[in-house]
Length: 123
Image (tube, rainbow, N blue to C red):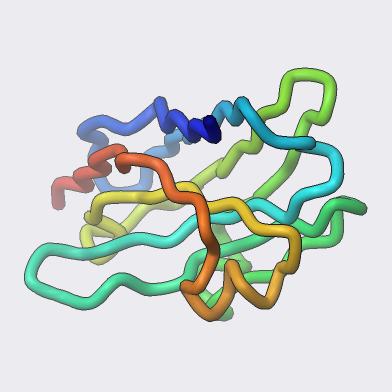
């Protein structure tokens, strides 16, 4: 059974930083692309970032790429999302996703998803 468990969310002031983690189990982690989506309050879920099995990163927007960094640790079966210079518009539930293909992460068709972790950025 595949499980993705996100941690690291919380409340932070604008300009602050948070690091999200997603621990995976039940899948051959080193062979999987992993990534993050987020769903702001009252809005659709949107792609944030993904990392291929080789470690190549893909970001959803220029604003995210300038402030966020996705990484993976295959030894720990975990990915991370380092978020710096946070803005109130980054407030959302952040979801971890896993798939054999990074395009599935980007297109929100990944077969495996976590339960989400709340990030709230206060102004």
